[in-house]
Image 1 (cartoon, helix red, strand yellow):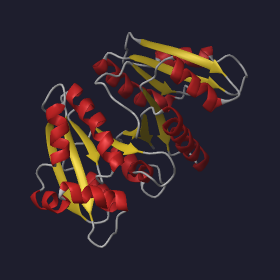
Image 2 (cartoon, one colour; image 1 turned 90 degrees about the horizontal axis):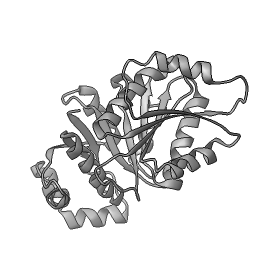
Image 3 (cartoon, one colour; image 1 turned 135 degrees about the horizontal axis):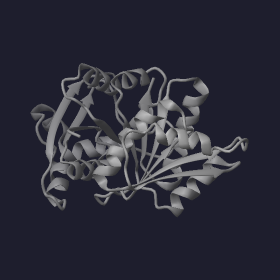
Length: 280
C-alpha cells in the first residue's frame, strides 16, 4: 500500500479521525494524502467556524503545505514521523474531491474519513449516495469510515468480512486478506444465515476452494439468526472486532440501502470502523 487519501473539512469529526488515519499509514509505511476543498461562498456551522479561527485556515489554504494541528499529532505519535502530502482545492467539497480522485494524479489505495452518528452529518455519507458512488466503483477503492469515538492503537487484531459465499466476493476478500496479513490480524469471514434452509457447508467449502490467497489466521463462521443486526453487534463485541468490511455492490437499490443501513448501525452503536468495498 502506498497512498491513503484522507479527505477533511477540518471539523471536529475529521480532526479525531486523523489520528486513526495517521496510525494506519504509519503502520503500513504509506503516504497520507490530506485533501481539503473550500468555497468562499459556502457558509459553515459555528463549530467549524471556531476551528477555522483557531487554526488560521486562510494561511493554510494559501501555503498549502502544512497543517499545524496535524503536525502536532504526528510529532506526538510513537513513530514521530509520517509521509504527508497536502492537496487544497477551491470549490464545493464533494465535487472537487471526486474530480481529484477521478484525475488519478496520485494512485490512491484506500480512503479513510471521519463519520458521526446521525444522517447527513459526515463526509462518509457522500460516498454512499447513488449519484456519487459510481466514481468510486470505477476506481475500485475501499473507504474506511471512522466513527467519532473510535480509537486506533496501531494494530488491527480482528477484522471481519461479511459474506454470502458469492463468486463476486472472492476478489474483495483477497484484498482484505492482504490487509489482515500486513497487520497479522485474525480474519473472521462471517456468514449470517437468515434463510434457515439447506446446509450452507457446500457453499462455504466451494467458496474456500476458489480462494487463491491464503492467510493462516482466517476462520470461516456461519451463524443462524433471525435478527441480523443484533447478532452482528454481539459477534463484534464478543470477538473484539476492530474493523467490519462490507461489499457494497451495484446490484439493486435494496441491497445498497441495506448495506448503508448496516454500516450506519455499526457506526452508531459500537464505534467500530467500517470498510465499504465498492464493486460493480
